[in-house]
Image (cartoon, rainbow, N blue to C red; front, top):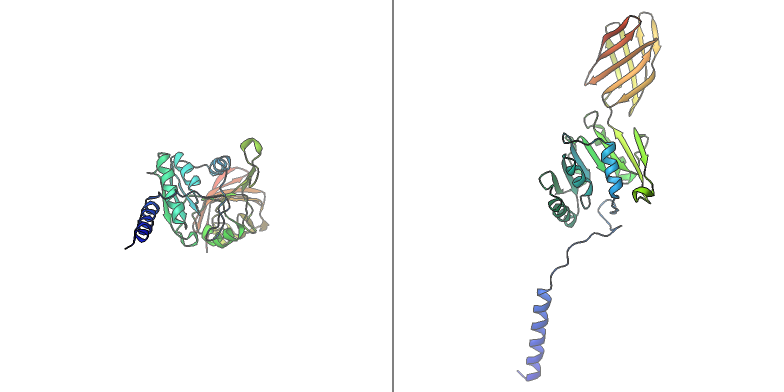
Length: 271
């Protein structure tokens, strides 16, 4: 081997060792980076706090985020004492979320899994905290409606087709929000549609999300319902001059009806 060849070989070897020993840069997400189903744009801390406040998150809740990104919704929920789970497709994001949860001291409550948000089991969640596009939300909507009545879905800015939010709030610059500043809240409604049998007649209801219409038929005639409200499992309406309030539990409604002589028990069973 010539001196020149030896020097070249040594240089290549030293260069390879130096390259191999160069530390890997830690993963750092960038605003707008592409993901499987949606680009990553983080909610501001003020928006995260507002969404969780509107959903009234407590330590009794199980909060989930689909497409959880760097885990900020889940970590914030865990700081409120809730159990929380983020589902994220990007493994680097999952690793970062776990690191940030550990740094925040909530790794025991804030968990993260790598997975497809459309395949995630959300049936046990009491709260969803989401920042997704309408195309994502609309595809997930059938699963939302199978959650337990009264479950809350908090979202950032984007809505669900034809399902009007039960509450909304617009943040301003005082909360450092300059874009994507509308917090939305949906409450999963009970399944009220159908014909319900009562002791003195029947109640027929149609339903579009939390909006209900219908009538009560009794021996003194048919009366349309008015001043209707369905919030989770709680139903209220007026029919025939009487005010009905009750709670839907599967195929049963139990509550009270305000009569001229005072409140009386009221019960209905779906056929």
